[in-house]
Amino acid sequence: MLNVELDGKRAIIDVRERILNGEHPRNEIFDYVKQAPLGTVFEIHVPKKAQPLVQGLENLGMNVIRDELEAAHYRLTAIKLMEM
Image 1: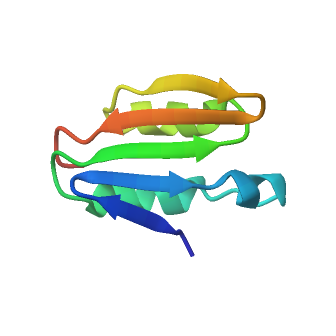
Image 2: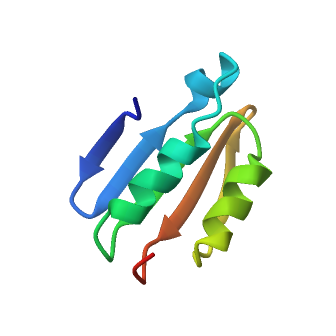
Image 3: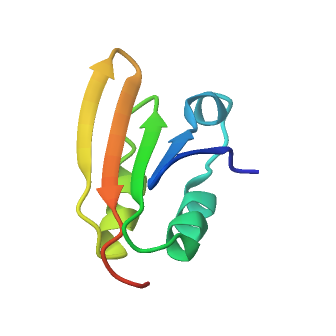
């Protein structure tokens, strides 16, 4: 189950541990993004560049900003601007 921390219009999703344990939660993330209200800012924390996740979000019509916060900690940021 996807753990999402809500802070106003910001949805913080930290899947670093799950990915390091061999899980692939991207479809859970896509499902959450699709049902979230317009204007939601997604802050997704991952342990690597997560190109398949970035590509999937871009395929949903989102622009994704990827920041490397430290070794093995990346933050993906995207805003839902249209219905999916």
